[in-house]
Length: 403
Image 1 (cartoon, rainbow, N blue to C red):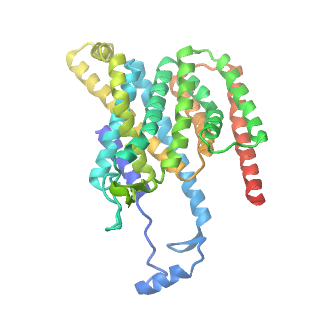
Image 2: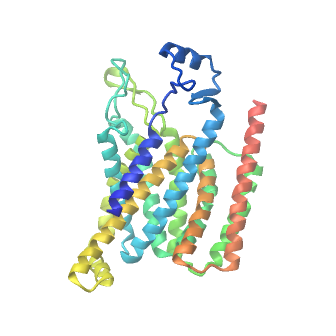
């Protein structure tokens, strides 16, 4: 029952978030206007204002509020995912299969959204395209999205491996280095180099995280290296996804131009999740397939000794795996909505601040001890991220003025 309620709440929130805004049709209590008057009144507003019930609001304010809401929702879903995921890994030490199962749950969720019409399916022609050549995604577009699927799948498996090998707080301390890797990947992939002053602000980030990691009581090389690997994979995912937010025209048969469908952020993530699931599933089966049945039985034996209670424990564990997959998908889908509104490096900065909330939640839930030196190092790293964000924004504004 609780599982059904949680799924319904998440689906309702997603539907509301992704539904198009409705035009206000009321201007005063008890007063009605013809539709033409509404259109003229809306057209009379400056472009920087949008029409809402009760008046006109600056589009910049609305955009800021939208981004703030998306960040808050992203943070909340991510905290819940990390807590549920760690509880699953504590009972079922199969990080490869758990990671891929979460991708599978997300892929099914995306398919249900496409089938229900909540999202436009990527294989359907674009609405309003008519006979002008609009079409759904073809083999060429899916092939172009495959590198994003690889990066997403590798990042997901590496993250779950790190969370399974160490404390949640330790993994996210290491993953606070994501802006560092994002800056390097952005430069390598041709997104452009930043000013030296901006790169200099990453030094306290690296230094603070290094101190925190070295003083961490639950240090694990496996957790450390896989967390670093996930940073690299997710940095590539962010940059490549930003490029793929709008798929340009491609050449059809006979050389004629065929307009490919433009993916929304939510649909793009659904496609990427399917690609990641299909690419990672064979590797997960090779890595842990043989011992999966025995590990599941051991988890049930540890939970309960009686047969009836054991069956209940099995259903409870299955629910936790499904919930972890649901929250993993929805928090990453919201992340794609954030990415659609901000720069990849801004996303990396927000990701680092999000880790503060996750670390605090993990300390409260799992009560993992943390040394004063590790706490100070984490604080320095987070402060460095904020300094990096402010410095980058300052020089971006200067560059715009110079142009």
